[in-house]
Length: 243
Image (tube, rainbow, N blue to C red):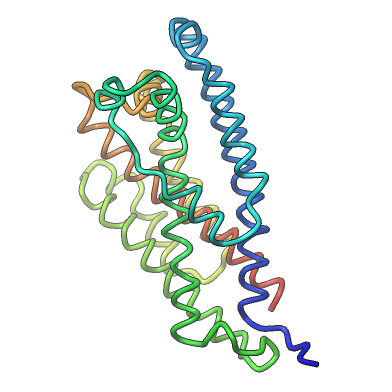
């Protein structure tokens, strides 16, 4: 009887544990943001039954049991609000809610690439007790560095941001301490979040396009990568505890 525990077993179990935790946190965040939007834009609540649509997504999160389920849920394409208006009301509500999770879904899909990396470099069918833990950690740090590089390029694109936040970013990328990396990532997140008024957040949630589009795209890109780093570290920590 073959009772070996494979890298695939540990990795996939860890990913599902991580996804359940991350999706629940994101769901709560979207619910809070939706309440803010409905308070500031009462016509939204009168026009759309977004709570019902949100419950469908919540049920999908709860029902997910495999990596394939996660990929199916998170591979929804983002749709521009103007294009949404051309469809029926049910499709419109579905797309509005889907857009609220757009950055989260994108980050989940990006982070799942680490599974392909581990399969290519080590092999998912390798017995976990035959794998050097440091090899797995090394590959995780290589992937984390790739994500950090994306954030660095965005920070460098704006001189004011560079002057204000680069010291923290530089300390973050030079560290191998996950706690410190996470702390610096949170500092960078707070720096960008405090710059933006509520109406910008409302536009992001609705996927709208207006004169703020350039600012929105820049802001979304930074917050998106910061969120990706945060999620990646959470998965990294779960894996570390199991290998």
